[in-house]
Amino acid sequence: MVTPVTPYGQEKGSKKQQIAQMFNAIATKYDFFNHFFTLGIDIYWRKVAIQHLQPFQPKNILDVATGTGDFAIAAVALKPERIIGVDISEGMLSISRKKIQKANLQNVIEVQYADSENLPFAENTFDAITVGFGVRNFENLELGLSELFRVLKKNGVLVILEPSFPTRFPWKQLFQLYFQKILPFIASLFSPDKFAYQYLPNSVAAFPSGKDFLAICKKIGFINEQWKPLTLGTCALYLLQK
Ligand SMILES: C[S@@+](CC[C@H](N)C(=O)[O-])C[C@H]1O[C@@H](n2cnc3c(N)ncnc32)[C@H](O)[C@@H]1O
Image (cartoon, rainbow, N blue to C red; front, top):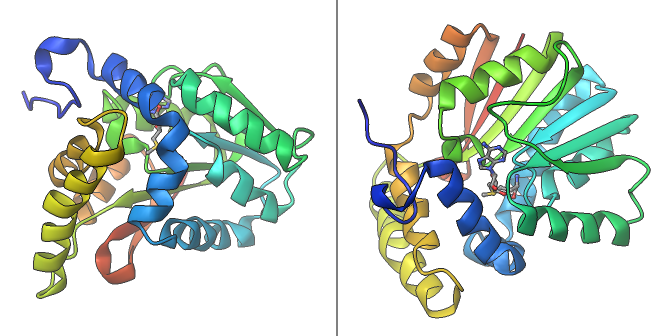
């Protein structure tokens, strides 16, 4: 059995508990660090992902691992009737609620505490599902993906964003240096949780990406699977249908 990568080590509780604890600890700094370490490119990645959903004109959207709500807010561009965001970190959800209120989007977006591995929705509920930088954190990846499959309508579409490592010289070597050494070092100086930004490169390195990830999704039942590297391969966009 593969040992899951966790923020604080195996003996400190389940991966799910540790993930919630870590995101609760960094919630107030999450947006700042996210935009700072990606130079704001994360905003562009979500925008590209949302553009891929445009042809499907989804009315009901679920944003899983919604965190501080940026993907859910970006999905408003699709003019859906309803967007529901779910997360297991109350700290992250509390920031998302404030942002939704500030943007006056509470009539479209609603967020709630829920676990991607046990979603409180009936099957075939959503036209589209978005997951931004979340699936890598699932305790049981296949169970989480099966739940997404279950609540997605037939012909519905799932878009996933995940950080990834470039494969070509010199971006691979430069990115490894940045992501595995420079980023955790800078973060350790300012982050309220010094483990969080070491967990990030470790978990990305251990996560199946590209075709390996698509093979897992296909096993769950997803079809029309495709993926696209973004920004020199530092992010992967996955598009799948039920
Ligand atoms: C890196 S943040 C991503 C936030 C947001 N989607 C974005 O685009 O910035 C990952 C989020 O996944 C959430 N998460 C991890 N495991 C989860 C699970 N099993 N169910 C729901 N949310 C989960 C974490 O609490 C955290 O808020």
